[in-house]
Length: 86
Image 1 (cartoon, rainbow, N blue to C red):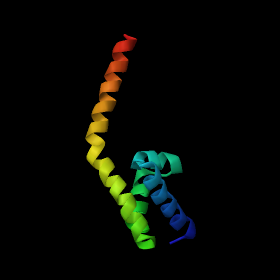
Image 2: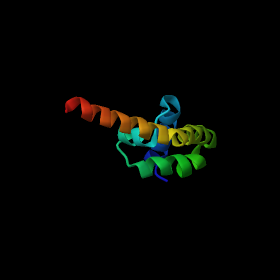
Image 3: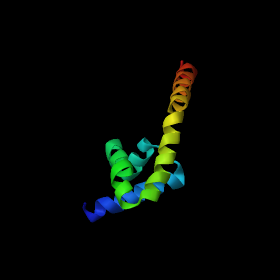
Image 4: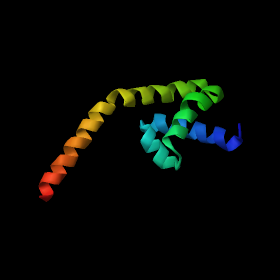
């Protein structure tokens, strides 16, 4: 694995843990795809730094368990915004 990929995987893991960021937020921050973030956290980081990977995995699992709530909030805000413009 190339050095810059390892460095990116470590930075992504640290960022997710420190900011409790979602995969989408992390991908936007680092300018990579969601697939790359996921692969960095689940595969690459597990080989480089297992404890960091476990910490990132906890945050990602929590975000995944809450995503239906975030989706509902986003939908409610969307329709509330549409009604205020009309």
